[in-house]
Length: 50
Image 1 (cartoon, helix red, strand yellow):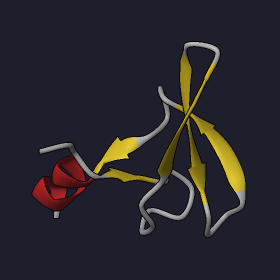
Image 2 (tube, helix red, strand yellow):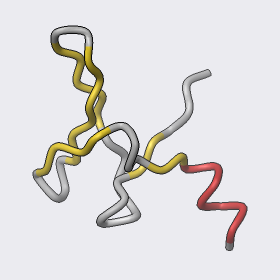
Image 3 (tube, helix red, strand yellow):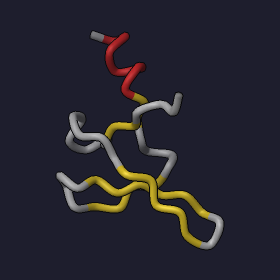
């Protein structure tokens, strides 16, 4: 099962993976921003911190 990835800016919405020319980036439909893979947070890590 693939990990659910969360936007680092709004901390609540899942992001969509965008693959182009061999690179993977992510897009948040809530913020309307493209996010680099190094900034995206895993949902499981956020739940453990609470």
